[in-house]
Each structure stands twice: as structure tokens, then as C-alpha cells.
Length: 444
Image (cartoon, helix red, strand yellow):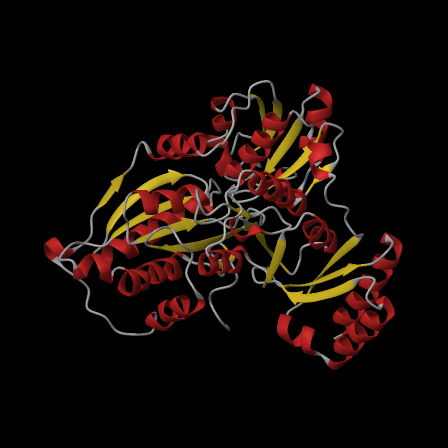
């Protein structure tokens, strides 16, 4: 089946590819690999478990909790909470491990398992490989009083809300925002915007287990755009199912993506002396316009592979203060160990409030090169990318663009897709080149 872990944990169709049996085995293996610290201190490993509201999360939570307890861990259930909330509580409670059950922006039939080490940090590849290898090893199950116990943390959401408001650098009084919760985990913490002073109009915040990400949230911006225009709001914020990402629309309904959000925050932090090394970290997916804008403002841009975990690794290694992805995962290491959509939204609004400038004006620092993305469904992601016909087509396209654009071809780490991204001087040219490469991928 290939490597179990993708760029953001384990994902698959719940109860088909991601079964309760697999979830239970992964949970027990994770305790054996990551729970040794608590055990070495003479204590019991502690594990925080949270989920988004999709229906299969109930089933998988039960399996994960059983697996953790069977390996002797103390399990702390926090219920439905954003992924960054689970990461925060993993650190706040001094736990050895955190488990989040979510497929983020994926449709409802999917679900996933994200693991956090002590401190709330995502796992490096080598630790994921250790956990995967542990699945096939025999082990001695604890019995009697050494079997793990389970408790619920009833004030988890309130702890996380208090943290979010405290991490907002300026009051939001006078701003009106539409918040699209994607019928996901943000639904229970959207009150953070009002607590920070804004007038918040919250939409798509009635999760029923089925409607998560359904024609709403950061992957479907029409609802938040329509609500901003209908209410005369200053901006709209759209989250995904587990609220680890944030996209925005300005007062006119124009999209403000992750690149523009990073630029806004980078300038704010540079101005206040909080942008360590005057450096921003982004992935290879970020628009060339972001790099040009940062050069103009005297800010260096470091590029990583796609995935907020790789952004975070670079931030930690180099002691930097801001990074993220075009898709809206933004990491502020001073306040979070992973992408946090609500924290990002609050900080963007804080910049608006502090400067008195509208979002469109702040976002205009980035002039984006036209960019076209085509997703091609495949059965063999690596094989399609490495096919000689595809390699030749990409090489020809790069010669054609001749430095006035770029091509990025990559297999998705979470879905059976190959993503074709092309930037060019015009959108028509970018689309034509992208479709040409996509056709080669489909044929391969």
C-alpha cells in the first residue's frame, strides 16, 4: 500500500481505507514509540485526543481511545476542537502525544489521523516511519491496573479560546467580519472574533456530521463572499473543516489568499520588530508575486516542500517567526505549533484595526502572477509524475515560459491526485500550458 503517512498524517475513506482496526493499531503503536518519556519518568504516558465533527470521527475516536488505553496511556478526550486547539492542549497539558481525527478540507467520506509529539509539534518523517514499522512488531499488552484510563477535558475549548484572544495583538473594535466555519471544528470557537472586539456574523456553523466542507468554507468561498456583500462587512474569513487554515475576502468580495495574508503579517511583524531575521518561510507553491513583494520590502523568503509541517521544521530549525502556505495554513510559532486559521484571522484583523486600513489596501502589497492549478486524478501518483512523456512536456513548457513564469508538478500527499500548477504572464497562457501538461499526465 506504500507509505501509510502522507504530508499531513494518514487519510482515507473512513471505514474503507481508514478502518477502526487501523486506527486502533496506529494509536497503540504511537504510544509505544512516543509515550516512552512519561513511562521513563515512572509515570503513565498522557495522550490528548480531539476530532472534527464529521460522523466517522465518533467511530474512529472510539477506536483510537481503545488503542491508546490498550497500550497503557492516560487518555484525555477534548471532543470537537480545531487541529491547532488539540496541538495547543497537547503542549498546555504537558502530554506526551496528541491525536487529531480529521481530514481537514477533504469531503465528508474521508477522515484522517494527525499525530503530535510532546509540545504539540507535528512528527518528522523518521518518527512516522518508526510508528509504521511498529505496527508489525509483537508487543506485550499491559493488564490489570496498568491498562490506560480515559477522562474528558470539559474546559478544553475555553482554554483554547482564552489563548486565541490573548494572542491577538490589537483589539478588533469597530470591525465587522463574516466567519465561515465550514460546518467544521471552528463552529465551537468562532466566538474568539467577538471576544476580541469585532462584530462577528457567523455562518455555516451548524455541523451535523455530514455537511462539513459541503459547498462552504475555505474551499468554497461564494457563501462568505455573498454574506460580506449582503451585510456590508469589512471582510470575510473562511476556515476549513479542522480550522487549521484561513482564507479571506475583502469588503468588495475579492479573495485574499494565503500569500497575501503572509505578506500582511510579515510587514506588521517587521514593523514591530517581531519578524526574526526579516525572513518569511513559504512553500514552492507560493506565487512569484509574493517573492517579488518581499524583496521590495527587504524581507527574505525561504522556500520549502509543500506541507505546513515542512514550513514548521524550517521555522524551528532557524528560529524564525512566520511561515505558511498559499492555501491558508499560516504558522506563528510564538503562539502556535501548527497552522491556526482562527489565530491567523485574528491577527489579520488586528493589523486592519491598528492601521485603520481596509483589507484590500493591505493585500495590495502583493501583485500576483496569474496562476492556474489543474488537479488530475490518477491511480499511481509517482508513476504519472515520472513518466518520460510528462517529463518532456514539462521541460518544453519551462523553455516556452523562459523565466517569465514557472511550472510545478507534484503528487498530492493526501489525495489520489497529481497537481499541475503553472504561472505565466497571462491567465490564458497559464491555463493553456497547464492543460497541456495535465493531458500528458492523464495519458501517462
